[in-house]
Image (tube, helix red, strand yellow):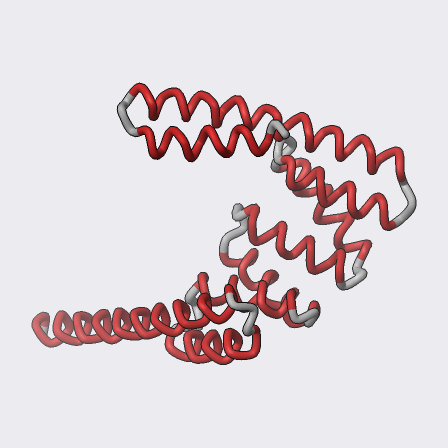
Length: 190
């Protein structure tokens, strides 16, 4: 009996792996189409990916982004809400949801979400940037400038981190990695 159960579980696991592998293949095709701004083809590939594995997070995220750029904010919102329900701590998912609220003109939901994000991530420049955009759209220029200045401050702090990483990689003899982080630091200091 134990052998039958073990065989059944192994078969089930392997079937799940194949589904995820298929989902990944469709996702990669969708990502190529997305990068080429062929959003219709990207959405077709993402639908196929999600038929293989409806819980495949990368496909869900790309589908939400694609819908967002297609200005289908309602369906993009659905995807980002689903993603945030699955990974409550993922800031990137929440930021995409925030963008969707802002562009979908759901200012009340956007204001509530940005306040929650500031409580959770008070040093993330992206949250301040989007709060600034939200403030500007409502004519609150005092908050707009405050938030942009705060975002700028945190970006400058990030450049110090990138410089430290560049020096460390250089000390370890990895000049390619060092150059990458040095370039990141330089782009933030412009």
